[in-house]
Length: 429
Image (cartoon, helix red, strand yellow):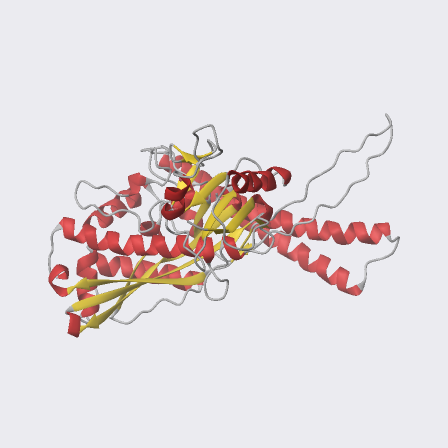
């Protein structure tokens, strides 16, 4: 989503709040209270500020689109106010080709300052972090990569089949990809928002109702409540241990293997939090979000066809749209052997799908208290946001002749509409 669109959503949310106050005062045939007037005035100031931000963002986006059209480059990096030109885009490609994660780790593990390209990227990432008020570790035992290497924007001129700006990274010299790969949950329909700045409101507008009227009868305007969640940056950390012997290698395949270990750890941390985050230090995950629809079952039982139909019925009754099933491999294996009924010879899962619906199998959906979980829902209502670049810290482990690399990133998860998901947490295999 473009920055201008996010800002417009925030502006709409403020206007809706003002509309609620105005409509209430009109209905009660009275003037605004002191608190209401203060809130309206504050809203006016916020809207004026958002209008300026929207105008600037739209200009930046138009400029980037014109420049990107020259050679089909990815657009959207100017969301942070950074200048972008054709020559700069090419320079970034060259820098990413020359960047070595193992070289950066070796310097950090030895407590030495970064040099060369690694130092340039580190400084760029720290500059971004300061602008976003993110607390990056800045000692010589650490290094960082900027947002342009974390995840290319989903908005590209060429669409490049992956929708994630793969042209930003060339693989003919060094196989370095964006740090956060495509998530399993995105295959289910979840929306990933990268390059965020500040808190991001996800307004959920109520439905509008048509009323039947006489030919000249006046329409009564009704306020629509905005009660969606807000994405706020939370620190996520993931670590991998790398042997000193492997770290001393300087070949491109070894460099790529180390990088992929780190990026997969980051992916796992994000996806596990999106499903079952506790909402304390972690983002609040889907299974712990208040308001999601739940099956009638409260104790463990072997899955039956009625359990699948129940989840489908809950989503249909909520008018939540077409759903996707999500489950882990253990439950999937069981469903493939459980008969749908006594005589058809059909099974609960066939051709790796449930009831012909899109089905995602992933072990990020963990076994909980000995039971397996089956999720059915419209994953378009799940948003995963990421702010800025990624910060790395090297921790020596002399006894194991290895270095533990901790990667820190800032992300959050929010379910815009909880009733778009139905869950059964009590299936046994």
